[in-house]
Image (cartoon, rainbow, N blue to C red; front, side):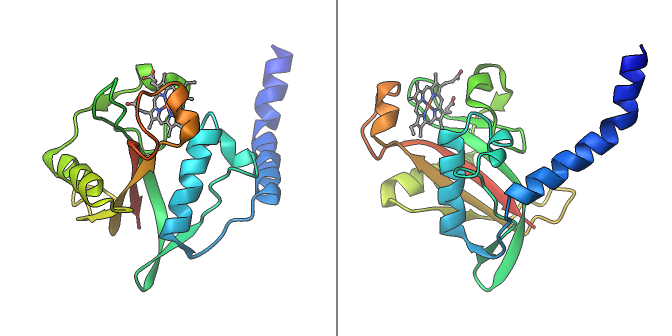
Amino acid sequence: MIGLSILLAISPFLWFFLGLLTGYYTEYKQGVPFADAHQKAVRTFVEGGNFGHSRFVRSTQWNVWSIQWKDDQHRLESIRLIGLVPEKGERYFEKPYLPKKTSLGTTVHRELSSEEKAAIQKIRSQSLPWIEMPAPTDSVEKVRVRIIAPVHADKSCLECHEVQVGAILGAFDYRFY
Ligand code: HEC
């Protein structure tokens, strides 16, 4: 009981120091070109078990504070996962962050909307690096930029996914302020 109250009393300090530590090991970058930011996100997803946790892992972290898009800088609102592996079908994970790969089986998902399906189709057929979508109008926060960008299979993915190198296994749905 006493142990618990001590823990509760010091927990704000623990979080504070954890924050300092994260800040120390993480150099957040401003105005990263979108292509570079996406590449980093893919690496973080593929190499890290969990998007949030892997920020601690310096080599794979997504330490992007804002991106450069057209003539402006935009801060990240969220990144959502679109699953496109053949064995599971097309599915959209609603959570506003990339889920842990190990918990995909139990993570809430829905079918893709017709606009999302069309975007994926277009990325596939024209080998586009990404597609800009109309900014969502229903969000509370002012999301100004929405971009869907694909995640391609490399050789290491073929061990588990029955596709060819270069196939699109998923996509990230980015929203920026
Ligand atoms: C060791 C096996 C394994 C390897 C290697 C692997 N995956 Fe997966 N991947 C899985 C499994 C299993 C799932 C489905 C998880 C679930 O639904 O529970 C999955 C799911 C996914 C999903 C989400 C799709 C969905 O709807 O669930 C994406 C995207 C993905 N993998 C991309 C990749 C990429 C890109 C690579 C290579 C860089 C890769 N995977 C390598 C086993 C693997």
